Image (cartoon, rainbow, N blue to C red; front, side, top):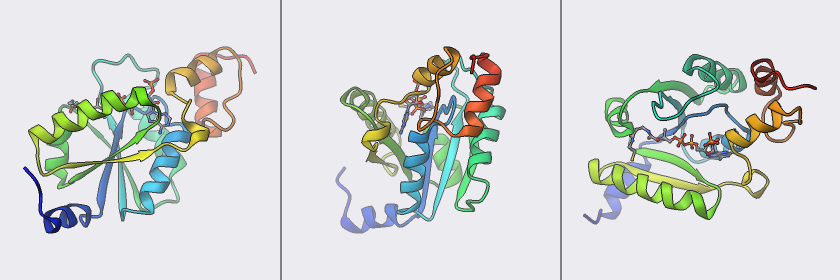
Length: 174
Ligand code: COA
């Protein structure tokens, strides 16, 4: 169903956007997307997924704590969690825009599928994509976990507070 200009304007004028993800852990790449999102939307709700299909390093509570720590002086960032379908959470919160970052071509296929599935289930919700800045396009939480575990530095990839927690968990020598 094609939306009228007014309908599209209404959606993006909702000023509230959700940035969902596993954030296991939050990286500088995620932070970059959140900060750029703040330049467009009034408020970014960073919502940590209780992702049953992923074995995570950090608990949901720990992931929330780390994000809150990084954005403690940013009143326009809210940190929350969600379980189940993302669109149900969006409906409950009255959120109509989902923010996602695109790093590489390989991200595109998965993101495209997700955006279309979400749209089919809830036509009133739009997905807003941002290209990840090139300095972060190679970063993923998995790569970071490996670097830290093997004693490498996470500088320029992950906030120092998060790196410290990772080192504690993974026991990387440094
Ligand atoms: N910079 C750096 N890394 C980034 C990044 C960025 N800008 N954006 C994503 N990543 C990385 C993450 O670190 C993560 O790395 P990993 O796989 O090594 O852990 C990877 O990209 C994917 O992470 P993320 O963006 O968090 O996606 P996800 O697959 O973990 O989560 C959900 C996707 C939670 C949004 C999605 O599964 C969902 O909506 N689930 C709810 C259930 C639902 O509604 N399902 C139907 C959807 S169609």
